[in-house]
Image (cartoon, rainbow over all chains, first blue to last red; front, side):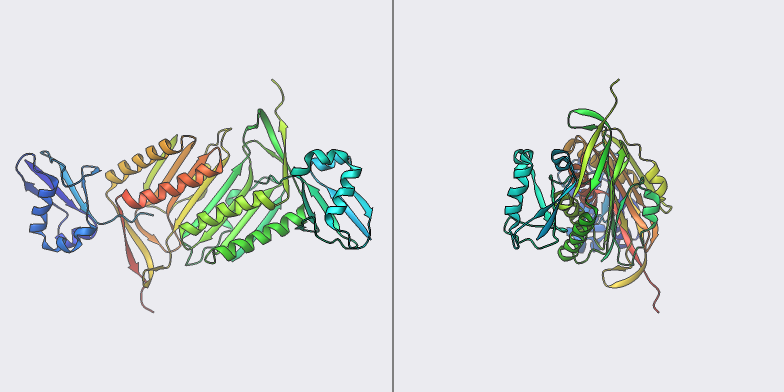
Length: 81
Length: 81
Length: 134
Length: 134
């Protein structure tokens, strides 16, 4: 299945890109995708505790099962206001 | 000494007047004046627990010693806002 | 702390009150509260509230409350408060309060404290003017 | 509960926002909060903040927070919230929130809860644009 990953705020700077696509085994858990993402972008390791993750428009945890076409977003703690 | 007493809000209605003057012994306590006021206006007895008392622009308790020329105010619980 | 107090007999002009605010470079939070006369008071429909004040004492007590804000929240930059007196119709504002501070928390705390304290000590009273029966 | 959300790139027009409020006969309390960009952020003087948002998610999360207000404070009549995106200069408002309710307590509680919750979940980020050195 195909899942796209978007990077926001300084995740975009760390990754050097805004979006990329991952080809994954069907039903993979979000946590496993994040491991792959950190493999491609080792700089994400250092901000691991400051990483928020959404699938579509909702926050999700590591156990969440991904589906084909999902859009995953990685971003730092939010700072509105 | 001469002390004037002003009535506000429904104390004015209960008393039927806005202000009156009391001739008092020098150094009388506020509580003793209030007893005289309630003697003249028995209706004040029924709202005793809903009575606020100021001397000049400050709230004072029963022990406060009055001075010649003081203005005492009686009024109900405040309701600003 | 800048402070401004008005006891007024005319409707509040919110827009001009708002323009009366001069922010400093440290102002991060502006909190404005409007108290509006509601159409019901206790049991019945009303047309207006009539506010009466012992004005010199009300002004003095408000200044003491402003002192209290300054003491409790030293970072608060400005407090402005306008209270209407006389007849205030349903839907009109009887109270307008503004607190300006560097951060949000103290603006909320100071504004609530000020209004709560006002309702304890500032000699202002209200009387409901009932709506005409239909 | 009436709700209104705007994510905008132009300066807020407070006066027209204010006129957008339609009170009901039950509205007793109107609380308005303005978050202003301060002249300092962390260590240094700044000229502006630049706000970035993941807009569809921000809108969705704001709507969930409005649901949360409705559930926690069923008497709240209206919530309006405007957040600026893009470059917001020092002294300008980045956030405007209004809560209308019958009584004061729930307006203060709901407004604070909404802003606190926003700062936890709504995907908006800011970046300081430093002031030029003098």
